[in-house]
Length: 213
Image 1 (cartoon, rainbow, N blue to C red):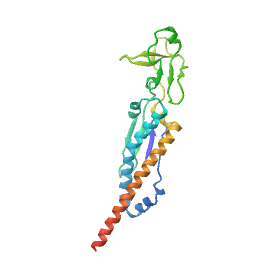
Image 2: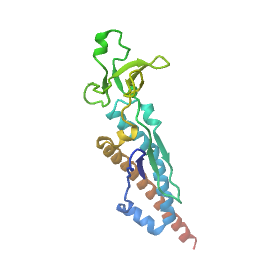
Image 3: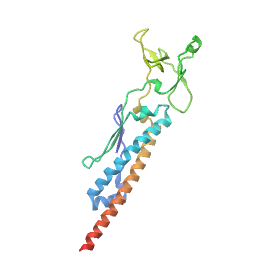
């Protein structure tokens, strides 16, 4: 089972099922049953893997959960292609997806001079933006507060201020190492369950066949 993100060359995660003695036994005695069991184990792990990614990113960053959920794509495994994927896609997010202040448009010169403060990670405090040209808080078409910045192309040209993408957040060691460990543990648990279930069924089927002779 792989975890990948689109903005980089790819992050992959694999589990070596040869480490499981019961899996080796099932491969020898009932290879078709093993393949079906592995596919089911992978596919049951995918939804949990998506939730783990959402949880671990949200624990590290101040990003809104909905933004994470929209970035995750799952590809199920089949017996013809026994490889499941969790792909995290996305472009840099608008700064307003993270915590920022002021949360209202400044109305005085003093408030404007304080600039914009951003909190992308949950650990630590707000950091004052040092971008050039500087960021500022305005309102979008719906009237909600938004972080903007003046572009270097001209004095009156403005655009949204952007920060990290979801794939970049996943690729950080603090998040990815944790995700890899938790998803791996879930897959191992599901594969062990499938192997034990199918070995028992294989044994019962063989016993019934023998008793009829």
